[in-house]
Every structure is written in C-alpha cells, then in structure tokens.
Amino acid sequence: MDVQLARLEPISPPEGESFADCLLRGLHQTPKQIACKYFYDEAGSRLFDAICELPEYYQTRTEVALLRRHAGEIAALMGRDVEILEFGAGSLRKVRILLDAAQNPYAYTPLDISGDYLQEVMRALAADYPALVLRPVVGDFTGPLEIPDLPGRNAKTCRRAGFFPGSTIGNFKPDAAMALLRQMRASLNGGGLLIGVDLVKDPVRLHAAYNDAAGVTALFNKNLLARANRELGADFDPDAFAHYAPYNAAAHRIEMYLVSLKRQSVRLCGRQFDFAAGEPVHTEDSHKYTIESFREMACRAGFNPRAVWMDEDRLFAVHWLESR
Ligand code: AVJ
Image 1 (tube, rainbow, N blue to C red):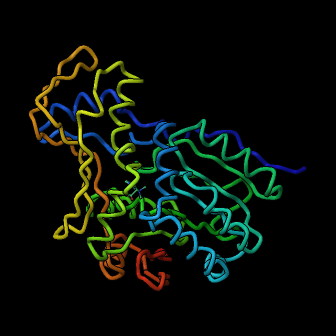
Image 2: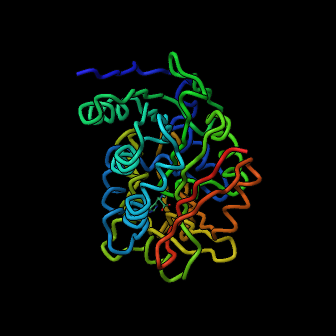
C-alpha cells in the first residue's frame, strides 16, 4: 500500500498558556472566567460526542446532512486535486464526506493542537484513503500559521480548500472571529473556505440545545471543574455549581456559566479562590449568525461569499467562501 504519511510537523509550537495558567488568571478576574478550549480533554471530548447525539442538539446532524446532500456541488467548487486543510481535526466523519465526493483529492492536512489526537486520525484515514497524502500539522490555528506547499506542488497544481465545520467560529467574539477568518484566508494560498455556522433562530430552540433534558451539557460544563480536580489536584465540588446557559438575544449568543450555589472556597495550585453565593464563572460564548451577518463578516475578512446551503428549518448554514 502506497500510503504517504508525513511525519508530524511542529510548524508552530503548541501555544503557551496551560490549563493551570488559564485557571489562575481567569479565576482572579471579575467576572471569573475559564477559556472554553479546556472543555476538550478526553472525558470532555466524550461528553461533547454525546451532546452531538442529543435530540435537542440539532447542529451536528443538520450539518452532516447538509454536507451529504450537497457533497457533489461542494466537490465541484473545491476543484480537482484539492488539498483539504481542516482547522481543528475534530470530526473525521465530516471530512470523509468531502473526501468521498472530491475529484481525485490530493492531500488532507488537519491542524490540531493535540499531536496524539492527530496520530489517531491519521491511522484511521490512511487505510481507507491509500492514495491521499496525509499531512498532520501540530499547531494552534488561532495563531499565525504558515503551511508550506507540499513537495513538488504549488498553489496552481494543488489548490487548497479550508474546512472549518461545527460552528466552532461561534466560540469567538465577532472581532476575534473576523481576525481568525483573515488568518485562515492567509493560509489558504488563494483557495476557498467551507465553514459551518449556527444560525440565529427561535430562542426557545437555542436554549433547549444548551439545556438538554438529560443534563449532558451540564456535565460537559462541569467537566472543567472535574478536570481541574483530576489534573491539578483542585478540590472543586462540581455539584456546588449550577450549569447556567441563557441565550442573550441582543448579542445573538448563548452564554455558558458555572454559578456557585453557595459561598465557598476552593484550593487550586496552592492558592485559595473564594466564590460568593450566586457568583458566575463564564465558560463559553456560542455566537449565532444570520446568513447576511456572517457573509458581511466574511467580506470584511477578505472573502467573497459564493454559496450557502441550509436545511428547510433554517437551523444551520454551510458557507463556501472564496478568497478575494
Ligand atoms: C463545538 C463550539 C460548536 O457552541 O455549540 C455544545 C460547543 N457547548 N454545547 C457549541 C458546545 C455546549 C459547541 N461548539
């Protein structure tokens, strides 16, 4: 079998701040906060997979259905011999839909901060796509990142297409999201970007998606505390915090918090942190866009919005943006 499996390329070093740094900094701030990227340790990633299966969480199944339904059209827009660059190697399930539809795809370049995760991804893909060049890149795609052309290839012979599914863009505040799009565009060598974006909709529906009846999202949120206990020997009592996830309609975003249910103190890395009764810790924003508001942001980031697909219920959108 002629598998071309590139070595892991530490093109940009995994970024500086550790989970401990983030907690020590964020729990000293007012209001307290923890960055949402720390949800995804092994337990958290498993909880997120469970969220994606929830009846209330329409996003994943809607996006997958859109990718399946329009795979042919997407493949045509990406063109022949494409190199697919995925930002955050989250869901192999999604990129497989693209690879299966693409016309003679040349390479798959997943970018992720976890080298272990990338190894796993590569092993799983190599057997099924023997002709595909696999180029895992360990790095933080939220920072500037230059990805060299593949050996013997250039922007003409091997067009790039970015892939950023899952509405992860929603975790960034609009200014940061715009900057991130700009940065992605810079790494695409003139190629386009396929990006999944959750749509503004009925607040009741949005609220339900982040407040599921089975309580999985609450466990996912509280996993930040459980993780601090596991990894850093903190003594959080996750049951002494409430999962609170309101929809801020004026800002078009779900906001997630862990709210202290009583006055309490927690020890972490040799320090004591005090929580007042009712005090929130901000853990995530999930911004929602209309087709128009997202396209406008994409334009400001230097893209030309070229195609958009959404489901009949207008729950979720997949945009194809071309570099300008
Ligand atoms: C992975 C960021 C898209 O915002 O919907 C799911 C994460 N948080 N439930 C989202 C999440 C709570 C998710 N993203």
